[in-house]
Image (tube, rainbow, N blue to C red; front, side, top):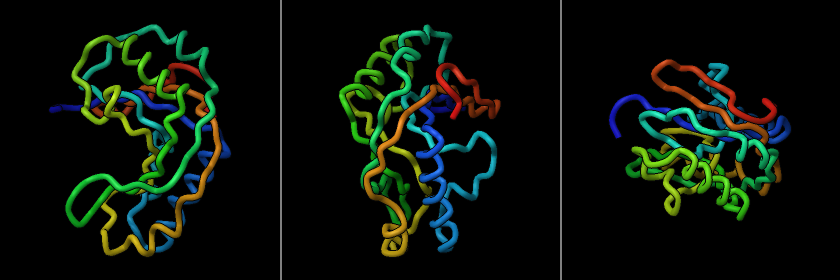
Length: 173
């Protein structure tokens, strides 16, 4: 996938967002990579549903009716290769969440999806840090994790080229 991306993301309720931000802060306070370093208002804990080079307007009513949606954040996971990785919290792929993801892709129609967001290959997660050194995992992992029940409350669109967020559905927690 080349060029700027557009993504569709689920936002979390205030309590769950605060818990993730606490994990960001704990990582940063330990001198580790953390999304806490990104202070733009658009930088919020979220679950990415779709990543494409462009997303045309689509009907959001079907998604809006499903929110709020219970979600469970689980164990830490790592993505990537080499001596640095993305550290994230897994999100349990409940039937309701998987159905929402599949149906959102159906509403969008065919497009140039990032492979990791396509139905069947999608691994729901909330990112905590990028570029965490493997050597730092013994410090990082005890700072995050433990099951956390929360709620996805809203769907937003992030446009990387313009650095803009558009709230599409739900309550902006």
